[in-house]
Length: 560
Ligand code: KIV
Ligand code: ZN
Image (cartoon, rainbow, N blue to C red; front, side):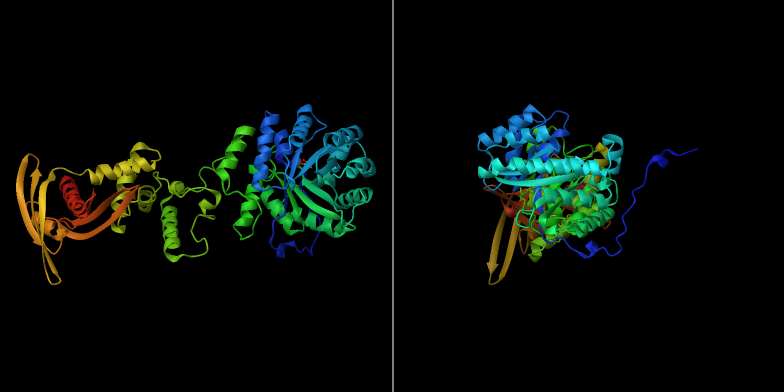
């Protein structure tokens, strides 16, 4: 029996054993052309209104895109009106070229010329389908018939351009052999060469040849072979600007565009976040930021990517997925403990080393470069490790827990994530810290106390006297030491709580606005040799330490 997958015809690569593109590198940004307002718009459940398109147009301009396909003005009244609004409303900056799309058909070409009247810079983009499949099942004609459609359209466009050029319009041309990827390469070369001739293309006035993978049908390396082959064979290559227009049917639109650039293309048509027909057009943000992370300036500004995403989502009603490269909600977040630990170390390394390079594991890009924050990098769920909770405490609340304390606090947090069965927000992590350490104030409490300091030469001695409460009973304690912590610890050490020995102490300031507090972390060891931590906070550093000691003692006593 025939298997279902056997009905598909596999792609036949062209032979190009002396290909050169694999050895090349992308060292500069291509010319970017946004097709959001045309290819993107035509793929929406509810296409954008004129007002929404105007807002999106301004967003594209702000990102730095200089060529913007604004629609198909001969196809619908909304498209026509939008174009007129852009031109008559003075929305188009002097350095931005608008692009209009039209089928290679006479009456549509005429209508499109009417639509662009008065625009300063225009790319007149026309297309017809050239693939073997479309010739067979849609047009029922041979290649000569298809070439005639394209050349007739080019002749007409050239003729109708006279008036526009005379009016001072900076008018350029673009031709797309639609479904290029399914066209025999020699046919694609021939039709494009004939169009270049008809449009009188020269090196000084080159024509854009846009080579779409209208429906992505092959591995990106095969596509790159096609581009290299096409460029080699095109007569008068200098008369053309080679443009790519990848769709994403196999999910490899980005790779197709990148390898196509290696193969010699110099322009890319794309959309923000990959909106477009079916699986979308290639995502301009990913392409640009991929270059950025290789040290190449993409000449686009995505430094506030969330703002761009918000406009996009509002006007298109599309949703940017949480895992979308560079912009998704979760792409700067690590849940896994080992990833969190490595990120934490990387961030620490960056702070200590002053490295001019971005060297943080698991983060291919500095989130602040796209206007994202560090805070959500590490999120806490049952997969998170000890370092994650400590990272949240430091980055969200300014508490720099001693390394030795990470496992203890991490275990407290992990127990809670297992209990609730979902992610903990930073505030919940802080609440656990507060409940477990800062508010470990029973059974022992410090009621009142005083210190007296004696200094002789370089030697300081501190006497501590105070009242402690254990449940309902108050009792006096006193002790001396070489500092307040030592004195207090010696004072309480003589009491029933003398099974704890002092291991380590760390303190630092935490600034929240103008309010500066001190935090002290105390590490004690009980009679079984198990360590226990306590934390105290106060405006007074000595008091923070005393509270920290009592916090550790109370936790130790309650643990027994
Ligand atoms: O995908 C495609 O082939 C197109 C053309 C009109 C350029 O959108
Ligand atoms: Zn397209």
